[in-house]
Length: 404
Image 1: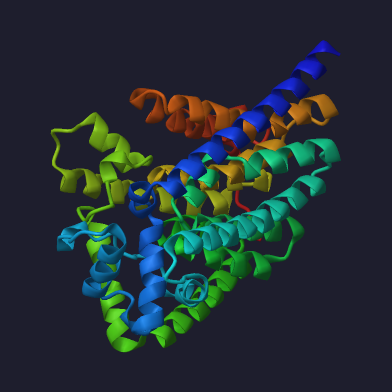
Image 2: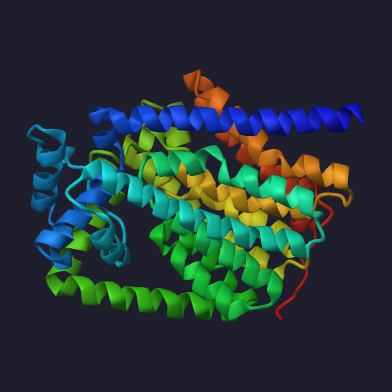
């Protein structure tokens, strides 16, 4: 009984601590002109304003982006200082509606919109817990913890579109468990807001769940056609140019040396090695990981939780571009861990509180740079270890032909 009461106290105190911390950080951010214009949202705001004033086809014009951003920061920017809008075009009509000349009000509306997207995605993940037989109390704890997950809040604070990534991944997971593979694929197409992550999640479906892959191709194709219709030929060329510049890793705001992926880890560990060399190694490992996952999904006979958990965790580690807010995707393997936890209210309630515990750990780790860049990797490697070595499925050791 004491353990149960202590656990309840931890959950209540953890929720209260996170809420108070987030509220304080948000108030400071939104009231500080330097912080709010220094967030990633300025790029989204710029895209919406250009679409309103010049048309959606001009959104990827770097000169126009610089003009709008200079109006907000109040000083002249060098071309390389512009925080580029390098996100996919299908978000432009949404930004065109949400954004107004009032930057702060626009920031609030965008954050509320993304928060609503997160609520939908996490509710879908909650349904997968219900399918597994988890008790309602533990499910509620898991959902609250997921909504308070630190990388999720960080994405809202930065004005990022990471909520769409999580929503797409959640629909993919739910579709796989419910046998609705077309829906899983269409949901997966939403993850193209992060194309590098989308490929890691989608390509392993090709030989094991081909309906999922076809749904992904169809959904992505529809989004691509919609984007082409928005931009036109000239706008599409400018979009491709922006993507190529971003892929180079040197433009303002890219900051690969502070990323939480393999490339970021290598750059911090080997600062004397040329950045292009590390990027090359990172891209090779990225491609090799996708090929390995295709093989594993094709030939592994085991429960989906372990395949999904491993794939999502590896995606976080190996993609060439990943900042702290993208660690929101870690919620996918955490929910898979909850699905595989031993049945029993006490045991499942402890695993359900993992998002709260990890958020507190990540929050505390920000006090020291070493911990800040270490704890996320420890979480990712621990999840991989769980799914590969400590799970009953033993995914790596159960490789048998299974081509259904």
